Amino acid sequence: MYFLLARLFQAAIVMLCVAFVGFLVFQYIGDPVLSLVGQETTVQDREALRESLGLNDPIFVQYLRYVGNAIQGDFGISYSFNRDVSEMIADRLPATVELVLLSGVFSLILAIPAGIYTGIRRKGGLAQTIMALSVIGVSVPSFLLGILLILVYSVWLNWLPSFGRGDTASLFTLESSLFTLDGLSHALMPAAVLCLFQLGVILRLIRAEMLEVLRTEYIRFAWARGLPGQRVYLRHALKNTLVPVVTAIGLQLSSLFAFSIITERVFQWPGMGSLLLHAIGQSDIPLLAAYLIFVGLVFTISNLVVDAIYVLIDPRIRHGAH
Amino acid sequence: MFEKIRSDFWYELLNAPVTVVSLVIILLMAIGCTFAPVFAPHTPFDPATISILDNNLPPAWESGSDPRFLLGTDLQGRDVLSAMLYGGRISLLVGLGAVALSVVIGMTVGLLAGYFGGMTDAILMRVAEIQFAFPPILIALLFNGIMKASLPANVFAQAAVPIMILAIGLAGWVQFARIVRASVLVQRGQDYVTACQAIGLPTSTIILRHITPNILGPVLVLAMLQIAVAIVTEATLSFLGLGTPLTEPSLGALIQIGSQYLFSGIWWVVIFPGTMLLVMVIAFNLVADWVRDYLNPRLR
Image 1 (cartoon, rainbow over the protein chains, first blue to last red):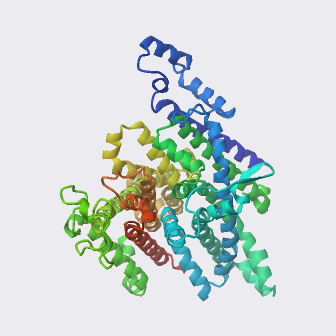
Image 2 (image 1 turned 120 degrees about the vertical axis):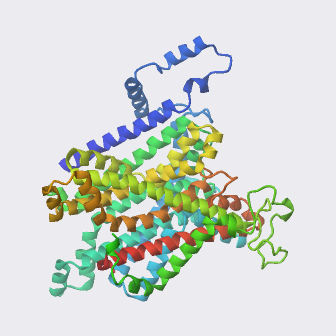
Image 3 (image 1 turned 90 degrees about the horizontal axis):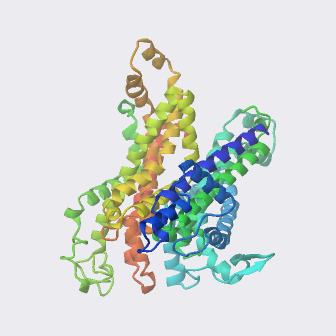
């Protein structure tokens, strides 16, 4: 319990730091007054506006006010869309989440068995082939892979659509393109691109951890006791690779969000990433700051979940013998 | 570090043909790109030498091509091969520059945190931990985006390459700091460090002359891997339109230009720069893998 409380406290501090960076960006890049007033506004009017917006208050007071608003979901109004920033993020979020979920699930389903297999049969032909492919998987820049897929499957073969999200349908009030065939055909290539990189990273990590664990004394002892291979590999070896693997998966989840920016650009997927790139292109500061804080929140929460899982899988952490 | 080049170095290297090929490829690319003005058949970004009449020519082995342009031309009649050489120069420059910056910051932080411990360690490593929770590419992207939003457009375009080096370098130092700190913690407990302290050597001498040479191995491996990552990051940012200006495109920007014409069947403007980028990255990764195995045979 103490471990989790300490982590929760730490997460809160991280979020305050991220919010501070977001606040600095929001407040000090560009002049909010200039973006609100027209040419003919007098200096006195500008000063009055500055005062009424609270821009003359001490920086600490302004920061607290910004955090207070952010907690209530108020990130200001987007310059370029003239809409509430949090509303826009809520609009775009489902598209990104469905992409991240789809590719995350697929990369785990493929990476875990492949990682265990290559760890056990590391000299085998199939294992060597998988490893060689994984080098390519982690080396190919994802935007390049996306373009190549479009070139092959959309331009040359004309099998799959190259842009957009396709039809969406709602199920239990969730609106997603994963529920229609058209939507799935749109999601296939972007999800594959996102999946491939994660796949390579997780696979290689599981393999390395398996190799490390299989060398230890207690595995030799397990063999000496005459336990069947399946039990040694899965119950004794795999279980002890889980802590670093879960850490990596947590980090990968946040990098899925980051890489979805690229994938969304290549496939013109209308998610959060496209929104961020638009915000950068238009110097839409409120949107940029809100994205920063939102992504910080996603990462912090995923790290907390990882910490909670540690407690479940490793009794040493549970009992405080760190 | 240099005494560490063991007698089996050349034996091990020559018995790894993949590594030798990768090294040769890196060398050829480095020479070709560094001296791009000498090797490139055309000057792709000089409006005086390009002609719009030469636009969209396919590579030399396809029908309707022009033998002057080995790998074809793009929409504005620029020679793809020459553009690749000039673009590769920017990619390599940013990759090496950014990693150099990461190494300098990361080693400084790691050495200080590892040697002094205590509060210094706690503060520095907490900062590193917070940054580590964010993917480097996102940090570089946001840094670049914020610079773009806060600088005037022409200043940003002129300083694009240094800003890119800064963005990617600042995004990548944490891993160096962690690895250096871990190695320093091991070294600090060794007798030779105690001996140095006992004879009263200044702390800076102990850190720089005695500890640093002993921790360069892992830094070298990580640096090789990070060069590949930095090149990909640069290409990605340029592809997203945040990096180098289109008047001076890197490989990523070339791919971005080409990707707009995919559906008109002009594949060569994308495929050739893309292949070059890919080969470059894989070559760096393979060499890094070999260096790691060489320095740490236990992993083989």
